[in-house]
Length: 440
Image 1 (cartoon, rainbow, N blue to C red):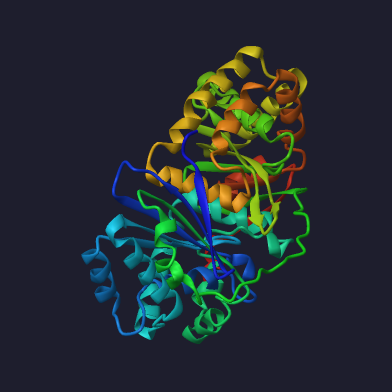
Image 2: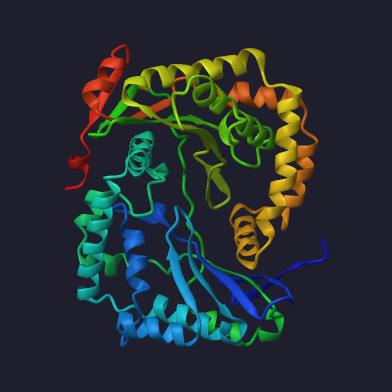
């Protein structure tokens, strides 16, 4: 590829990674802060809530005034709280790039922490939770994360809003105390895609100095326990059952990574052509939606942890056990017979066509380079991905499926009427979960 990613260093605390494109006079930028939920020492969710409070505006400017100031500059700013890395996402016209960076620095280093903002955000949070707990997919996702990693606190990749009870018990003073250590012992990385040559703006980028003190935290991460002996049933008065299974997988730098990407696609990652869709929807008519996914892990410093594969499906309540049994039967078929050459060829063709579509826009390119920075991958690694996938053989893909799509002692969670689901899974040890007990 003709384009090249460039790098700068600011005061040994800030790395600048940028790609110059001449097409449009706009910029997309991520300012990555090396702090996330893993750095929480007390209540889960305090990191996310603190970042949301920060972006309400700096001292001396109300949220409305701060929002208008950004709008006058044509800038958009939002924050995303991550597991080990968080990002301030900014975009707008290139003429106002440096203005945008100054705005981000101001909210980071001079936050207001107004009590009225805290109360309003807490009310918004309560409303969001109440709405979320009416959505079975939200409930399945929340409790899957909550229970799957409950025995390994360091590995709780919870929803970005944290544990509900913890957030609802937060006090304004706790946020300020957490903020007091937020910018110490960490690094910043600014990732930019624009028509600007940031080398020419090196002196102006000195505005990034002094935001963080530098350094990095290290963690002794235990291995997640993925062997489960029971079924979690989340009691919800609905006529469908939402099923979620999880099993351990490999991180993206593992030799099986690309083979698992492809085997997962054939298993349940594609549309109607996947094994799961053909079995549960087309042949049996049990579901409208069934899919599998492969999460290649969460980056924590130089380590990647908690990689897993998952299956999600919705079916009529009365058919929950039958759907589960068919999923596991298809798992057994794959282990016994493997995939076909035709399935492999179709999967390779899909990835060859779809991967380049991930880097069409400025926003997509920024996302890709940010991913490369976080996971320490080669720049424009999608070209390498295509080459690796094209060279896969059926034996390796089938071996990946046998090893990592076996779902031996998987995590199992089902959302639906507990009274009916418990009868269907009476041969399992079951735990009934009452959602309201986890709100207040």
